[in-house]
Amino acid sequence: MLKQLVALSICTALSQQTPIREIKRVSDKPVLCPRAGCFDSKGAFNPAAVRIGKKTILLYRAQDDAGVSRIGWAESSDGVKFEAAPNPIFDATTEYEKGGGVEDPRLQKIGGIYYLTYTGYNKTDAQLCLAKSTDLKNWERIGIIMPAGKGKWNVRWTKSGAIVPEKINGKYWMYYMGDASDATDQMGIASSPDMVHWQDATDRPILARRPGMFDAKVVEPGPAPILTPEGILLIYNGADDKLAYRTGWALFDRKDPTHVLRRAEQPLFQPDLQWEKEGQVPNVVFVEGMIKDGQKYLLYYGGADANVGVAEMRLSK
Image (tube, rainbow, N blue to C red; front, side):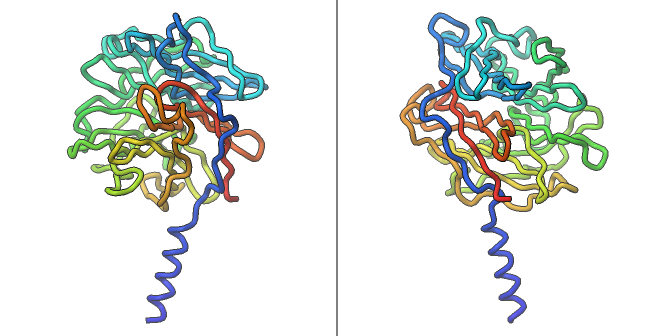
């Protein structure tokens, strides 16, 4: 009986441990907003982020008045005040992108090459796609890497690829979102030998929705994960039954990226400000970009599918 109580105590303690000490806003105002008459007139949101020298670069989802998305470029010398370029740096050109556009970029740099995962939306299917670049401005499309409706468990659309920064067990790994058969959006994992050919690594979601919790309806990867001494730390976006989006985390085994060690019981970050509660989609904070800044990380997020905000995250250790 004593051994059972000790084991229960240890399990309870582990479930309550969090690798993240805090997330707090750096600014109460958006750091990037839509511009009237431009290609981002309806929305400037959901950015990938990278630090090059002393400049912070955002590759953000830019939506025009017709609802078509492109990827814009914005840069800053302090990580807060951004200036957006006059033209997009990535536009819809293929049949699997035309109509809806290119959405929700995420970045990972491996061996001097930037890999850009994004959603190609042709008004019929949303599919997870990949492109690569050495300068962030000239892109070579690799194509659709997780086709819609052809996965082991994802029966419709695929989105949101967050690539692990290094090979594990001889493979590249990517957390992504797919549509499960119960009409909810859940998180899966795919692997690749070459960054080109990807396939599901499991026959079911590895981070499933949890009824009654902040991720009851949607479990969607955020920025590319980071490697910590404790494991692979992934920030994710969870939506409840009312489709309010909040920020969670999950920790995976560094030797087995399919194995979940722990995940958030409560959200770390939620929509509180007016511009996070009111917009194209109300009550949304959607973290998609992350850069290391000294002892902290800067998180760039979409607010209500309209603007970009910035928060800082500090790890527990």
